Amino acid sequence: MRTGERGTFRLLDRKGNHPPMRATTLLAKILGLKKTRVCGVTWTDEGLVVDVAPTTRVPRCSGCTCRVRGVHDRYVGRTWRHLDLGPYRLWLRYTIRRVRCSRCGVCVELVPWAEPQSWFTYDFEEQIAYLAQRADKTTVSTLMRIAWATVGAVIERVVPRHRTGDRLDGLTQIGVDELSYRRHHEYVTVIVDHVRGGIVWASPGKNAATLAAFFKELGNERCAKLEAVTLDMSAAYLKAVTEATPEARVIFDRFHVQRLAHDALDEVRREQVRAAAPEDKRELKHTRFALQKNPWNLSALEEQKVAAVQKTNLPLYRAYLLKETLAGILDGRQVHVARGKLLEWIGWAARARLRPFQKLARTVRDHLEGILAYVATGLSNARTEGINGKIRTITRRSFGFHGPTSLIALIFLCCSGITLLPVHR
Image (cartoon, rainbow, N blue to C red):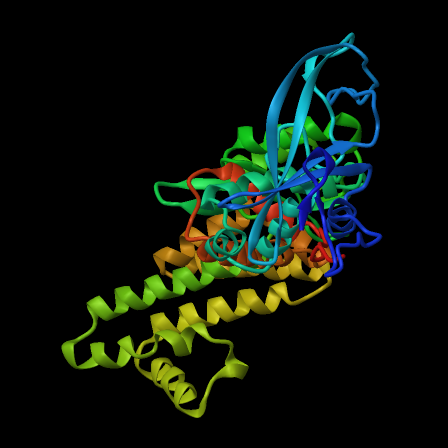
């Protein structure tokens, strides 16, 4: 092996003859970079450094991509990390220029292998993003030999490159929910499109101002096209929705309504345990899961426990019937029938002399139209809750996030329909 012109290597056979392909040509084929020529190769203690250059002579502005002949200055030895070559790290090296653009001022030139502000090539970042969709950040950082925080920074650059069009266009049915990603009440609000599926918007916070920022970005014209908004019974979210798009139908999530009934039943059970005689407390304590389950899912032993409650504790059994009756009403699909039954249920719960269910009756009465909207449409936050479960898995496997920016980028990477493939040549 001899050093050729411009610092390149030429391979020699045993007789000293030059084979037809130079090392730079071989590397150019291995790298597979478009509009890039390989000028030289250097071995270092850390890996392989390949000198490259764009195939175009006149540089382009990285801001507006226009051709600019005026060169402001040069930075010698700028490097970009590329995909490893076997066990060796590989960098691309180029004397990059800053150009004087009439539109953007002094800007760094546009190179075909990397973004202007990145220290990694496109292929390297695509490989990181592909792995981040399927593994935790620690595994990705170890495999790619980069810092843990760098994974999040790379994802923030990759996601915008794969967004096709404006995801806020064509929204008609959306779901709103919040997700806790850190202690001390750190939340992220997420918006899901019920029609296409997947996340379309996310931002830190869980108050009315956070959701109002979404509607402001959506615009008045697109807000007027919204037909339905599913959400929990958050007063802050409800205020933002009614102010921004009063024509849209507000649908309260069935899961949250039934969860309130389950919580009320459990509160009644605890009150009855505290008031019961010592010999009856043990039996009541073991009825919690039997009372919370659906009747068709009860085992033979659990059916006996519910039957025992019916005989020995009428207030608790009354609370159980209230919970099951509410679930049965929400299973219906006739709005007028459901309205009459819900009004009857509200009156029954108000007269039941059970404080938790009296409170629940007032809540159902105040949100009656939104609950009936679920009966009419069948829409709920089930899709949103499912995506939130996936986001919680992402959060756990990442061992938490210091801030919302990297989390939101990872949410869009994994939950917005972006499909990535490994970088193969």
